[in-house]
Length: 374
Image (cartoon, rainbow, N blue to C red; front, side, top):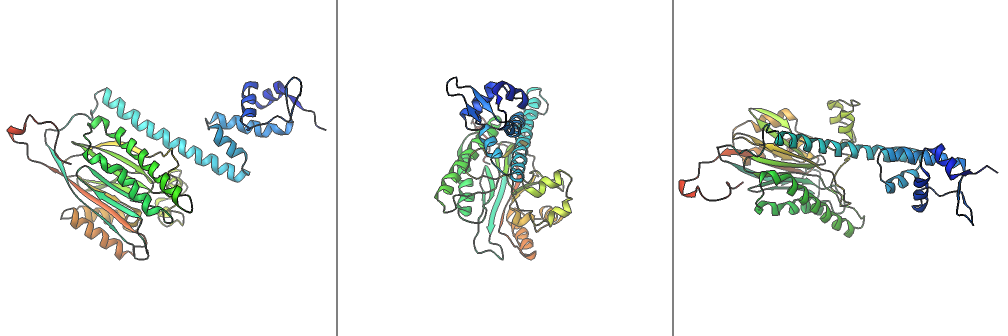
């Protein structure tokens, strides 16, 4: 029979405090091997040290106790995958906080203050389309364009995918008529996405599989500023001065391999798991979309699209179309045509918007509050 260790000895060996061990006992995370019936003193088996040390390491990662319990109960390979997924989430949250910190530092120090509006009034011309892929029998992609909101969402195939993409955009539509100062754009957009995630949770609960998920990329406008929210592999592009810039970052497993230098962009394009998402709106709460604030100038053109377009039409081909003649409707017609020419294996959702200079308001309107319609 193995010699049991007192709680003090076990705590020192596991690099945990006796107080922590008592908490883990109460939570069912690490039960003692024996408890003295009279004194209530706890004793531990030396074989429990491996689990205790794992708990200590995971706590150093600031992993929540509920998630630690799940990790500890998994086989080693599955536990490793769970830890990797957790750390990917931490890095994403840190990056998002870093972007917000940079924005606040620049704003408070007066460097390129995003609250300054240009003297030229701006507006947008826009168009949206969602088309069925050539080999699909249902369309889970949703596209929307309005005076102040542009959005695309790609619901994952299966029960609830089409409802999820629609719900995500419906949750954002009230922002069209909400007067939002430029400094509040990110906050109200984040709140709307949280409402979208809650709506998707209700959809998931009503499906036989108990799940529903979607990607989402959206732009909310105020004056010359726009707030961008993005989660998943739908994309936003900016065309400025004849150059095409992708202003979102795919939340996919394959993109994470590219980021780590384990795949090239060319290898990623043909990878069999290129559509495997690591972040999406799932209705489970705790969604971590990317949020950022951008400035617009007259002549900018924006494209939002699902991977049904970006996966089959190369970036250079997108640039060629988007820098050509015509307005948003003509752009969409040509983009969809090129997707179909490439086989259109997936559904296609896309929005094109042009930023244009508006005429100055008449002198009689000078005292009115608010800005141009977006």
